[in-house]
Structures are given as C-alpha cells and as structure tokens.
Image (cartoon, rainbow, N blue to C red; front, side):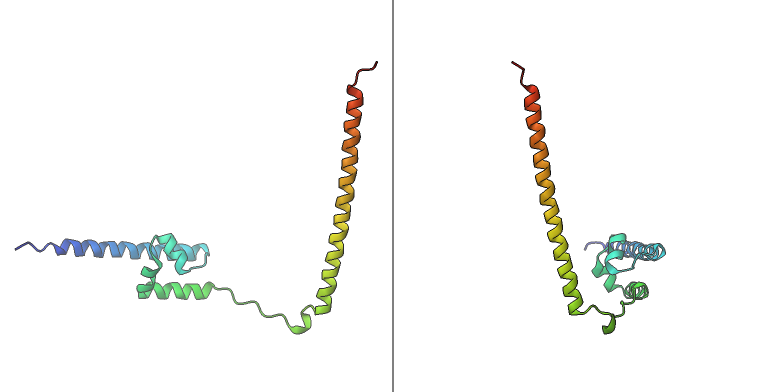
Length: 134
C-alpha cells in the first residue's frame, strides 16, 4: 500500500489560495486608493487572476460590487424637450456647415491653382536662367 501523501498537496493548494486572495484584496485596495474604477476586469488584471475566480469568492465579489457601485458616476439627466435643438434648427446648422464646406473647397481649389501657376513661373524662370546666352 502506498503512503498517503495528500496532506502536502492540500497544504500547498490552501497556501496558493490564500496568496491569490491576498493578491486580489491588495489589488482592490490599490485600485480604490488610486481612484480607479473597481471592476472585476480591473481587479483580475491587476491581481493576475481570472474574473471567474473573483466571482466564485463571495466576500471578494461583494467587495468589488460595493466599490463598483459606489464609484459608478450617476447617469446624465436627460435634456428637457424645451432645451433640445429643433429639427428646423438642426437643418439650418447642417445647411450652414455645407455652405462652409463649399467655400473651403473653393478656396482650396483657388490656392492650388495659384500654387501651380507660381511653381510653373518658377520653373520657367529657372530654365531661362540656366540657358547660356548666345
């Protein structure tokens, strides 16, 4: 009959579990202290543990949920109908934006033509300067 060697294996598993718990708790404290949102994903990444492991440990799960709920910003209140932009106002803004785009395209095209003329004149001038007089 073989000797029972399960005690050291069980002790090692317990030790590993306690180390993992300590890492998770430390990660929760560090995230909370830094003002970083405490989420399961953030704790799992910081502690190098799986999210499923965090979910299976009740006290750690509760701690994360409490801190997550406490640091979640409240939702923005909806804008009252009287302050929302009307369809007519939005249409006017869109037309103004289209007009500005047309003007900017026209200016771009005009500047490109000016640049092309200036470069052509410069090239012509350099050719005339490079020819030896006869």
